[in-house]
Image 1 (cartoon, rainbow, N blue to C red):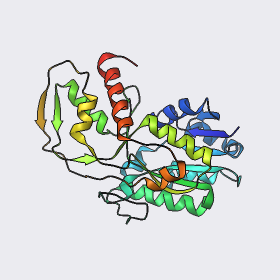
Image 2 (image 1 turned 90 degrees about the horizontal axis):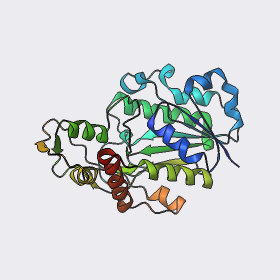
Image 3 (image 1 turned 90 degrees about the vertical axis):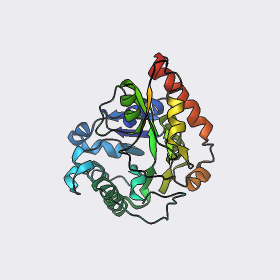
Length: 270
């Protein structure tokens, strides 16, 4: 059985992924600090996935001491150990049908840092690396400490105040944490390497997504214009990865996940 190491114990992705994979592979889940104390254990695993992140990596200019992924990669000496880097769609300029070969155009310290890390990891790991440029992940983060707010965090914050925002015709590309976990499972199973977009692969209207999430809200609310919103409409082309994995990835799956999440948010049903 393949041995999987997941690093990052406080975050949403690491905890969800560890729970999903533990019944499918021999999976160990540790913190970044735990790994630093026992660096050599990393070479006992077939796959390593890091979900930990230093807050300074998000906001400040690149500094290798803030780059958890680059530092973890330096611990790897086993040529059979493969590394999954959770990169971001933000390395691209917002656009439609963005492919892996589309122009890299970073406009923030976070996106610049992600692309710098991509290049560092490839130099170190070569074919033992898979880079996943991920769109927005939808999931229940209410019990997780967050370093920055996502779309769903803002939705929950606003609805608690009694309003939702009208995003007009704006759209983005989303994927549920459930589908994300499944895709990671198949990536490991099929032993992939290379650079891939991980996404739904199509437009999702923000107002449509809000309607799914708000389905079970029985309280009164008002609709406000989103006057401070900077539109960054985009969706990724995910055909390269989906063809490799040969699995379905549909908008209906995302809708069903959001409707179930709505029950959990508003009706306390799991």
